[in-house]
Amino acid sequence: MKPEPVISLQNITVVRDGVVVLKDVDWDIHPGDDWVLFGANGSGKTTLLEVVSSYLFPTRGTASILGEQLGRTDARELRSRIGYVGPAPARLVRAQLPAIEIVVTGLHASFVDTRWHEYHDADWDWAHACLDQLDATHLRDRRFSTLSEGEKKRVLIARSLMTRPELLLLDEPGSGLDLGARERLIASLDRLSSHTDAPPIILVTHHVEEIPTRFDKVLLLSGGQVVGSGSPQDVLTADTLSRTYGLPMQVQHDAGRWRAWSAPDRRGPTPGSRD
Image 1 (cartoon, helix red, strand yellow):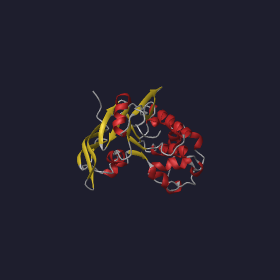
Image 2 (tube, rainbow, N blue to C red):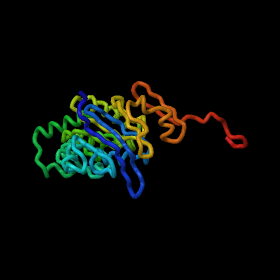
Image 3 (cartoon, helix red, strand yellow):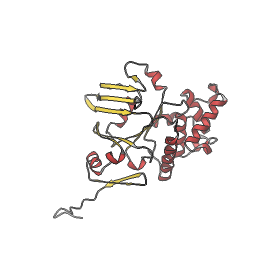
Image 4 (tube, helix red, strand yellow):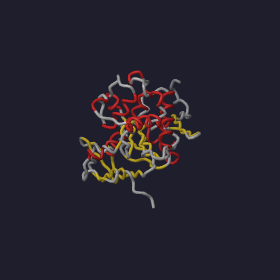
């Protein structure tokens, strides 16, 4: 028998200022699933992530998160069971602290110095283990301010694991990274996904090149609606991406990684036009 879903969304619709941002979204996430939430800017990815994280109640529809239905549970308690890494936490970090302290303070969802809370040996051991899961143990004694953007992202993801979350949400962690940092981050996410006790992960991106090899499910949004849901091979096709972005697209899948680019217009120049 298939286990109960970690996330179950039914007919989720969100209306803001009279504008339909999400419409009739259905989505089930089961234990062991690692999903990519994919779509162009303005497709509704961030809004859907707000629903999943319990920070936004849908206008219509039913949202069950970790077995609790939004509107019938204490959202504050529910949020303590969810790990989240996005642009906002990075701005709150005490940049003078070493990486290991940044990680361990995640236990109390705090960005203050460690002297303000009590930490036991087991907490520090777990903080080291969280860094190791992201292949970032060598960063433990480095001040956060001295880390590259990619290293900072890995430390913050490690921090989000301190509470042993039942669900992990990663909102465009590859944003702003150079090629090398992006590839190290992707390798770290594959490493994290390989752990048997890792929580289900939702990775938000709008670049197919950022999809780790172990993430085997994709939800594709366009205009606030689901365009496709399932394996990347079924969802990330030239047809679906062409419809999503409004221009001809080509897609390539090789050695578990993806690449997409706009297809050249082979019709030739319009008579009388300049090349």
